[in-house]
Length: 112
Image 1 (cartoon, rainbow, N blue to C red):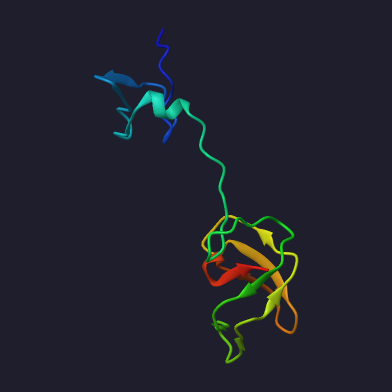
Image 2: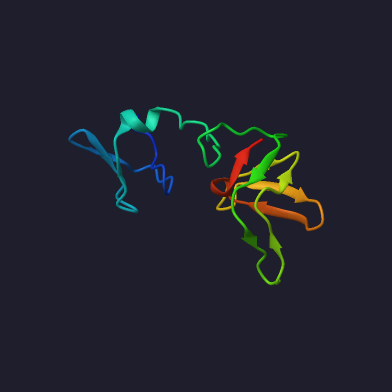
């Protein structure tokens, strides 16, 4: 009975050792078992200046942002209250007064 862990990509149980690496014959994925044992670090969100962001923070836009599908623009200096951090390309979910709910990228805001 093998005590090797299953493949982290395809979860196949037929992994084997190749030197210091583990290899999955099903999908061809190779990984270091020492790195796989370490837990992934928690995601940290930072604004354009490197300040840590948290849910509920207030932020200010540092760039004019065009709204996709509209001719409206959100101006520099617009304050956004009570942000919510999410995973994805746009990592801030918020509601902007006069525009409604929207998602922003953290690279275009600074913590107020």
